[in-house]
Image (cartoon, rainbow, N blue to C red; front, side, top):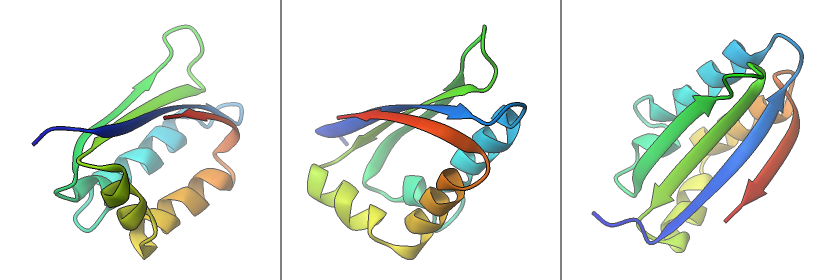
Amino acid sequence: MIATHGFHATLTARLGMGDRLVELLLTGLDEGGPAASEHCVVHLVSRSASAPDVVHIIEGWTSEEDHHRVFAGAAAQAVVAGIDGPPAEELQYSD
């Protein structure tokens, strides 16, 4: 499969919550999770070496439409709700 749509985001976790934020983002790979979809061809989660509460996520999707459709589902919305909650305090997102 070829990724024709993608995004990257940089999230700043609340102090000391970097591990929790990474764990939450990786739940997207669980069965039924958005990154487990056949339409998600890249799901990369990484951390800053110098700032452990800064987390980066890169995703590649088969199309923008597939990305929006999958993220409208309950599993994806649960991950997003968790990010908007206690683990993260700042999000920078770009297509």
